[in-house]
Amino acid sequence: MGPQAIAQGSLRPLNISIGRVPLSLLIPGPHLREKALSRYREFTADSEGGLPVVLRTDAQSDARPLYNGPNFSYVLDDASMQMDSFGAEFHGVRHEYALDSLLRILLTMVLLPRRGFLLHAATVVRDGRAYVFTGRSGAGKSTVASLSPAGTVMTDEISLLRFTDGCWQAYGTPFWGEFRAAGQNEHYPIEGIYTLVQSAEDRVESLTTKEMIRALLPCVLFFTSSVEANEDLLRLLLGFVAQVPCQRLHFRRDDGFWKVVAA
Amino acid sequence: MNLFPERNPKLAWREIDGEAVIISPEDSHVHELNETASIIWTNADGKHSVDEIAGVIAARYEVELPEATADVDELIEVLSAKGLLVASKRAGAPAGA
Image 1 (cartoon, helix red, strand yellow):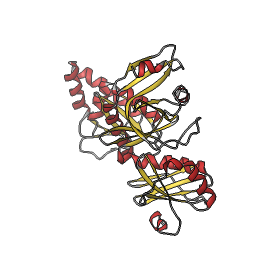
Image 2 (cartoon, helix red, strand yellow):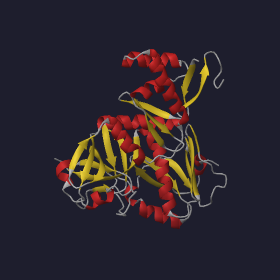
Image 3 (tube, one colour):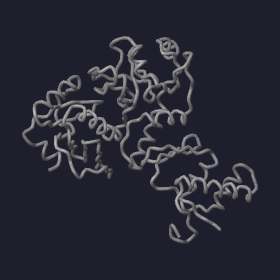
């Protein structure tokens, strides 16, 4: 039985929207539903008709990684997911952490044709504009977030960037790192993106397109080995780099970096 | 010997500022080629021979054809060893022949 058939069943969906991607989570059992509701409270949506996502607690024994057009599957430890044009099924979801991980993987695939992607990055809002700070683990994302005023941090871990309303925008997500915040379902136009380098001085350095692509690629969340999907991602990132100011930020682990970023 | 090099079809790539950036989706490894290697890469479509590609490079860099051919041969060997190019074929022969 596929997601479409199950979506027509008796489960009451938990409708959420992340990055303007509506999802209808069909969750078995009140315990997991309550956990999910708590985790995604800021992202609940009134509208129905989102992509059905059927959760199952049982593991799928024959799960294999796959990508074939709209069909995609992924195995993550004891959990796995499958998706097609009609929706997705998550298997082995015994707690909200597995749900969270599979949702991230699902979003990378759903966002790609919608001109969006997930990036390991902290995003901070200043004067109504989003500043995106990216880098691998330990680069300083959480440090940047901790040095920013309360209420201005959209995420300290995973940013959702998407081209909507004629420009690239950063969307709030429920996916956080050390801050463990609920997130805010808001979006702001991106002022710039900065690759983080800890340094003895605060300064920004311009990057070529190739340098920026080289910096971005390892930080993009992407889980498919499809050549077609990877070429779509490259094309998307090239469009992003062409339209969003990209710089390398050398910073001293204090809030002095704002003087060179928002100068 | 006139070979017709071909790009590995299992790789995703784009040309950025005249240089090829190649992703191996299987392991997410990123390869970046310099300008000369990128000329070979973009022409490695199974239709252009090594001699033809060497001709492009000789004209671009104003070097003698034998020198360009030697460079192309060497680079094809390197790119093939990295799995970026697949088996070349002789003109008129099926791939892998």
